[in-house]
Structure formats: C-alpha cells, structure tokens
Image (cartoon, rainbow, N blue to C red; front, side, top):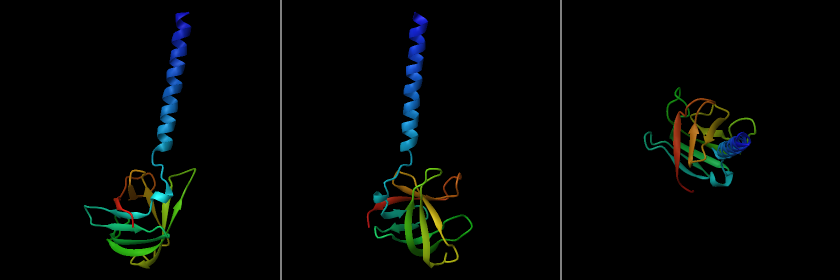
Length: 133
C-alpha cells in the first residue's frame, strides 16, 4: 500500500512540474502588441527606435547587425504573431541608409525590450523601452 501512495505522489509531482514548465514557457516572451508603441533606447550605443501607435517608426543611430554601421531610417512597422517561431516586428524601411533592405525583423522580448538578432542567435542590439510616444 505504501508503494501505491508513493507512486501517486510522484505522478502528482510530475504533473505539477510539467504544468509549471508549460505555463512558464508560454508566458516567456509573450507580448501584448498594444504595449509595443514607445521609445526604445540603448545606453551603450546611443541608438534609439520609436514605434508609433499609427504603425510608423523611426530609428536614429541604429545598426541592425554587425556588418552595417549605425544609420537613421524610418518606415512602417507591423507586429507578426507566429505559432511556429518567435513573434517579431517587421520593419518596412521607406527612408534612410538601409533603403536597399526590404524588411528588418525586430524581436520583442516581453521584458520591455526589443532586439535585433538573427534567429537562434544572441541579440546583436538590445533596446529598452523608456517612454510612450
């Protein structure tokens, strides 16, 4: 009879741990698109990006990867939710030095930051939200 109780305890413990892990993973990086508009800044580089609530953005002194120098650019932004990969913000650049680029992905982290990074890579540039536009 003790074995049966012990087995039941293990099952309850395993199910509880699984539920906590699943709920923790689902909440990690979860972003409310309505909370994205704002001013994001990187203290180390001085780079800044402004996501306006009307779907426009402007970037000042921002480098999106290690092969480009900091530049100013602007355009339209759209939040893309994905069931199979990370959610991201698509930046459609209309004006600026990165004109040759058709779209740049910016990843919200869910902690008041957005990141320029390649998929499955560490972030190249992290910008922290400082205020709403």
